[in-house]
Length: 139
Image (tube, rainbow, N blue to C red; front, side, top):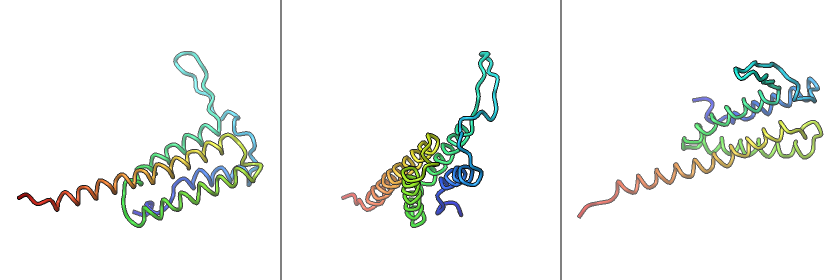
């Protein structure tokens, strides 16, 4: 499968940078659409809400990918760490990236790094335990 060695969180990171630097978007809180809810309230959805929601769905896909074991998985985790470090540096050093939506995307990337390594280690432990159980000989 092609996407196993590709960190998907680069997609929301790239979308943010394209809109912030190429199109000059500075206000991420402007409403995109307003939805009338049964209770009578109006729910306004902003660009940042859409981007963060998309990032959370991508995080779910990354967590599913983390359950696989192999060289591609290790490379994927390393690339996820590179993306997180790049986002952290951009957040600290670039003025247009010092926004709440970008910070939340960076937090999602951090959860991806921690979760990915944790899930991979736990899955590998189970594989080792199952492999060791096959070698038990009854007397």
